[in-house]
Amino acid sequence: MSTATLDPTARRVPRLGGFNLTVLGIELKRMLRNRRTLFFTMVFPAALFLSFGTAANWNDDVGHGNVAAYVMVSMALYGAALTAAASGTQVALERALGWSRQLRLTPLNPTAYIVMKALLALVLGAVAITAVNLVGLVQGKPDMPADVWVECALLTLACTSVFAALGLFVGYLVPGENAMQILGPGLALLSFLGNVFIPIDEGSWIYTIAQWTPMYGVAEISRYPLTGDLGWIACVNAALWLAVFVGGAAWKMAQDTARV
Image 1 (cartoon, one colour):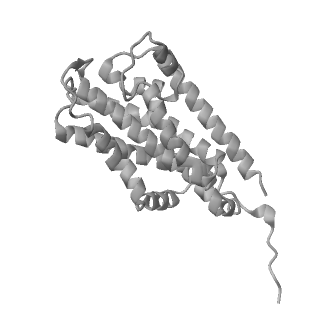
Image 2: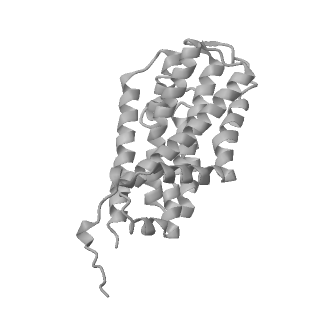
Image 3: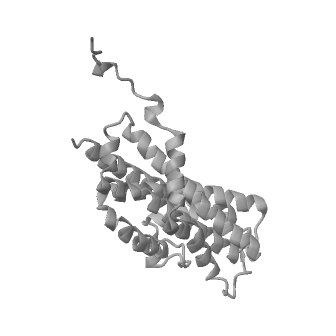
């Protein structure tokens, strides 16, 4: 009786590094079963938008719409950023539980794994954006053309990739139990400083600081179809912070996958 000999060199790497829509679907279902995830994805951003509903100047004109539309786009961005970052930090919990170590024993390419995590974060960010926009639509106070409405939502989703990368970076940088304890208050502070929650007067020293924060650029880009105003500083800001967070996540991922 003969025993077949396996040749380790004959092992093939899966197509696309192991990127798998089935795994992506399982991850999405797992996240949506989490009540905390659903709260931050759908309830919290919409409730935050409604909390500004007593503002007396909501009908004042802003660009191609009004103040209510301006606030809605800002709250959609904050909700999507928080949700995407929280999704990205799940890698910290997986590392703590040893799941990342188990994945390193499979043919799954680390880059494909990170891409799946980023796509998952964008999907959840899209849910948060949709929830806020639906509340605004039902409420009836935001006023802007339909094409501007759609363009703002799409740009907000694109800008969410910055915070998906931030979540992955923090997830690899700090222990699992501390990731959201850092990101939650951190994103709230950045939103205040980044001209998201409260408009900051141009020319003030706070506005100068705001232009260096990760929220400033993406907020200006998300609201551009509405305001019609987008400076080059905002574009450079968003591109630089995306590069920093993606580079940081790739660096920490490389260190993590190099461990035996």
